[in-house]
Amino acid sequence: MDLGLANKVAVVTGGSSGIGLATARLLLAEGARVAICGRNPERLSAAAKSLAAKPDALLAETCDVLDADAVNAFARKVTGWSGGRVDLLVNNAGQGRVSTFANTTDAQWREELELKFFSQVLPIRTFRPLLDGAPKPAIVAVNSLLSLQPEPHMVATSAARAGVQNLLKSLAAEFAPHIRVNSILLGLVDSGQWQRRFEARTDKAQTREQWFDALARDKHIPLQRLGVPDEPARAIVFLGSPAASYITGASLEVSGGVSRFI
Ligand code: NDP
Image 1 (cartoon, rainbow, N blue to C red):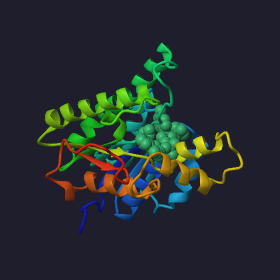
Image 2: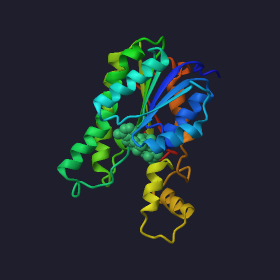
Image 3: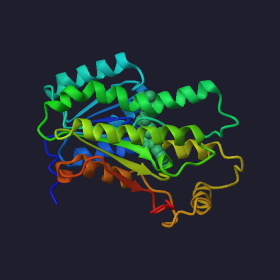
């Protein structure tokens, strides 16, 4: 199947690690030109180097997606580099917060709500004029299964992700028929954030393999393992491609079957 991504222009927020980096790699392999961003310049330049893209196929810019001025500056750079067109926006930047209602402060609630909503709102608002100029544009948001199946130990993340899912449904209707808007709902994917949680484990005697196996067992994942970044990346690339031309307002679960609802 031809995904129709050759020579398309894609923007991937949080493209310097994990799922975003895997998405950028797949998009480049499909012949797309890709702009990635992240906050940490060293991580970003290491990611850019690892992508080993053809000259002019990759743009890597530092940008905090919660900073409107920085997102505007990133969009200006993308405009100069792409000639003012963006075919695909992948809103992936972010991380989860592990905390219960009892131990989440007001400041942490505000921080989490801001991260989840504004990591969508600012890039979508800023890149929309560039998407409008493309023939078959799409937005893919990386969201979590927590939006539909909340976890008390990630109370703020779960609530915020549910709101984002609701927002995306409104945008799919408002932006139709020109821009398609879809999301993926992740379970557990072995990426930067799980590596950080592994490094912070209490039982340092546990090997990486033992720790991740125990995690998959504890979470009752039917496929008995965490996902790897390429697995959600393939779903993102499909939903964002012209091959998904009749799909909008949809969400695709990429979780190894961990949801318990129908
Ligand atoms: P990683 O930590 O590997 O990657 C996160 C990426 O986002 C990095 O490139 C990071 O770079 C960037 N980033 C974070 N905050 C910002 C910001 N404010 N502005 C710009 N870039 C930012 O994690 P994943 O690949 O797992 O995460 C990708 C997305 O998937 C995240 O939104 C995460 O919440 C979500 N998710 C992941 C799950 C999982 O199990 N892995 C489960 C559910 C959701 P830098 O820090 O340099 O800015």
